Length: 294
Image 1 (tube, rainbow, N blue to C red):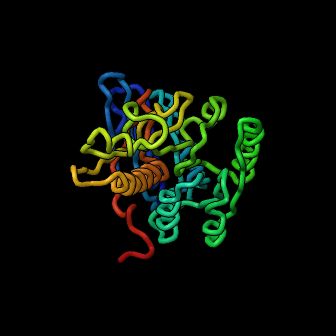
Image 2 (image 1 turned 120 degrees about the vertical axis):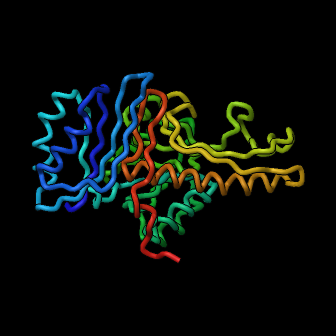
Image 3 (image 1 turned 180 degrees about the horizontal axis):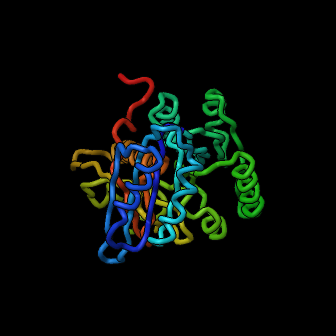
């Protein structure tokens, strides 16, 4: 380990930043990036620190010595090796724009993750996935076999050691039990017309109402459908001249971008759950760079 990430949440009080900085310095670490937020409404403090170990201190050494600091300040904290890629499973149904976008970003190094599998209830993207040398798991879902299908998904997650599941337009509702089991570890993407336009063809409904903004929302999945803590959102403007097909095409573009940014934030440990909301810190310098730029 040469670079580490420290995430901290605790009750707000004096001396938190000083205690963290002192401990890292005493253990031979130089802080190269830091972000913090004090939520005055909840009295909670959030901090993300990136540091470089300059004297050979291991992650275990730094973590062990931090326990006393954390206890005094009532901290919840995690240390992470910044060079260790998160293991991710992607899930998709029949719309492949988000899947293809994530695969491309992964392939050029813009998303430093280990994709340990793609799960789908259809076979449409099997060849695409296999051509990337990624395991493909076909798990059909019907009303009759939903319980068995989720059991299969649990097996895949366990066997692959996946840290994160990304629903890249996976069009099946996960059970409340699974959502609770993997709280904070499942990211979903959907259009931002909810709750106005639900059900089939939301873009057609938006066209018929003359909507002038199309958006997308990426959020953590909870038992409350499409109401989990929001990680990322964006919009694109529409004019009266656009067709229903334009709405769909523009919507797919913004969905892909928003989901990719949400995954980027999560894998770089920039997202903190704050009740029903999130704290999302800015990206560290260099974290958007890829192996194949330009």
